[in-house]
Image 1 (cartoon, rainbow, N blue to C red):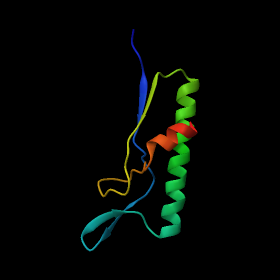
Image 2 (cartoon, rainbow, N blue to C red):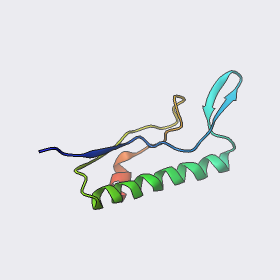
Image 3 (cartoon, helix red, strand yellow):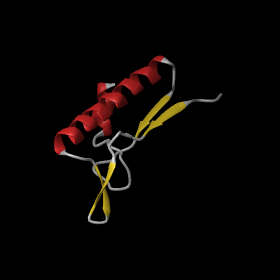
Image 4 (cartoon, rainbow, N blue to C red):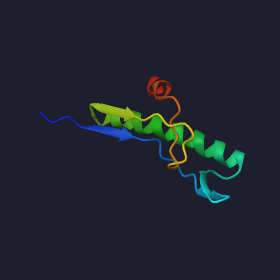
Length: 83
């Protein structure tokens, strides 16, 4: 039997901004906070949809404020509880 799941990495719409030769995620603080909130809501909504569609698994990564990319998932357990 094949089982299907979703791997959600907390991708957001934060742009990469160059600061002194380094790339950081975000712009001004209010915009960054708004986008982070939307990312968490998107994760919860996607988890609910995955459950309703019959997926067996829904994995979340744990990312805080890393410079590698615009991902944000600071506490997967609380997000999963909300789902």
